[in-house]
Length: 353
Image 1 (cartoon, rainbow, N blue to C red):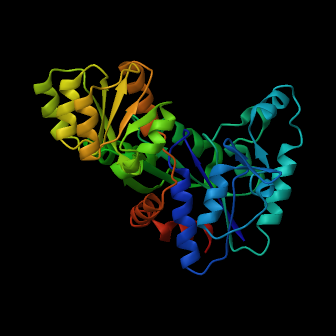
Image 2: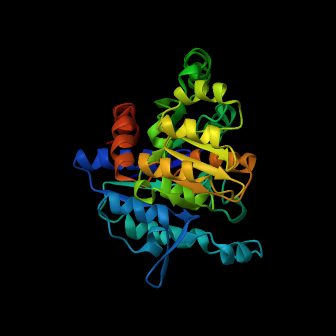
C-alpha cells in the first residue's frame, strides 16, 4: 500500500478537485483506493457523529461509505479551538494514525487530503508537513495563482519534505501569466527540485456559483424570477459608471452578475436588456415597477441586499475565489480538465505503482 498526501500553499487552492481526479484515475486503472481527510474545518453532523462536509462529499463521489469520525478524526469547530489553545491536543496525532490504519486496510493506494495550507494546524501538530512524515506519505502540493504564485513556499517545502514531495500542481493560471510562468517560474522550481506535475488554466466555470447560493452567501433574498435561481454566475460587474461605459464592459462579460444601487434604474434596465445573469441591488432599495416587470418577463433574478455596493463587491470577489466543488457539472468538467493535464505516469512511477 502506498500513500499520497494532497496539500496546498493556501486554502481554497483546488485540493478537492485534484484529489478527486487522482482517485477517479486510480480507480479506473483498477486500484483499490482509500481516502481520508485527517483535519476538517467544515463541521457537519451525520446522525450523532461529527464529520467534515468536504470529506463526506468526496467519499460520496468515490463510492465510499466510511465512518465520518474515522474519515475526519479532527474537526476544527469552536469547541476544538478552545481545547487546542488550552494545550489539550496531545492525543490528536494518535487519533489520526489509528483512523488511517483502519481506512487504509486492504487498499492499494491511500489518498490523504489536507486542510488549509501545509502549515495549517501547526499549533497542535496536525499540519500537513507533520502528517506527511508521521503517516509516511508522498506528497503533491497545489499552488493556486492569486496575483502571483507561492514559489518560495514550494522551495521551502522541498527542503523540508525532500523526496517525500513528488511535485506541485499550478492551478488557476490566467493566460496573461503563461509567458512568465514558462520562462521563469517553472525553470526556477525545477532547479530547486520541485517537479511541475501539471499546469491547470483558469476556467470560468470552476469559479461559478448558483444564483440561489450567491443570494445566501450575500445575506440577500431573491425578489424576482426565483425559478431561474439555478443559473450560474461566473463573474461580476459594478454598475456605478455612466451607462455608455457600463455597456462597453458589460458586452465583454457574459454570465456576469451586475451589482448596482437600487436607485440606478438606468443601469438596471441596460443590464436586463443585455441578458445579464442576475441583478444584485444594494442598499436594500427595491427597484421600480418597470424593472420588476421586465426582470420577470426576461427571467432574470434580482437579489436584494442590505450592504452598500462597495461592500457587496468585496464579498463577491471573496465568494467567487472560494467557491466549493459541489455541482455534478463542475465535478465532471473539472476532473476531465485536470485529468488531461496531470503527469500521471510520473506520479505512478514516484509512488512505485
